[in-house]
Length: 400
Image (cartoon, rainbow, N blue to C red; front, side, top):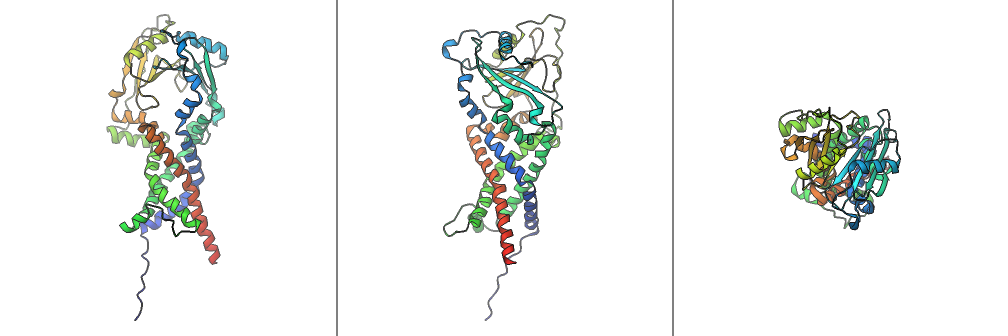
């Protein structure tokens, strides 16, 4: 009686092509995926780490707290004299917590610079006790670990405007890698699926098999979070991605544009207390907010002159997603417009939330932990994937 030969079922066309794409793209962008994943993972707990390292600068001594802080203009002049920089102070961030210090920032960019260190002329953070005027700490952010990590993650230290595409293209390919990886992982039946969800190394002795399982199983668990991270990442890089989100969320390609209101009191002499008036009004309008940022150099991010004073209000600590925009006359300090976060449409709200979704902070500390773990796995995938390929190459050579 002849024995029946059970022929191994050939993989489907989808799986065959998924395997090819997974291999080609993995070998081509693996190194960049490794760098971007590692720097992003290291950046996740920036707020917590900086909060601990800068504790003495962020918090003022309780005995120095008085009813009224010094005028912003007075603090600005004092810092300018003591720090003695050729560039003007750009912004001040004012916390509503009276126990926290004011943060004055110097930030000047060079449009001609082709890398991070050339593009950033100066980036310094100065923490000052708003009640005494004492400078509590000066940090050269240009050479600090986290801004450098952010630049590597965003543009591989290249100029931000076009360096984002150098990273963006590999991230698009990484999304394809994640999708093809899920296709390759997906088993034919439930019984096979069970074995691909857990590690069973009791009878496994070879490092190749263990490495394969690490790539296969951990990759599957991280893939869904990795897709969210990747999609929210290319949202920053490519306008067409943002347009897709805008249409899906609000039915329109373009977000509503805010008309910059020209100061109606331009014929008046500038009130020296204009910044203090804006600060008082913000505290009245948003008493439950975390902090607010006021531009002090009269310029926007692109270096163009501002027609008014746009104040950004951060409603929740450690979150960029819940922001409101309030504008004041730059001569008199009169309130011109108040665009609260709750009045925004869905696409506008997502545009503000995308950064927090990308870093995991949108979901609080739990989200950061999950994002951190997923980031570690994403960092390991190019390594374990390369070792899987390398092991197969060596095996092929031995047969020859």
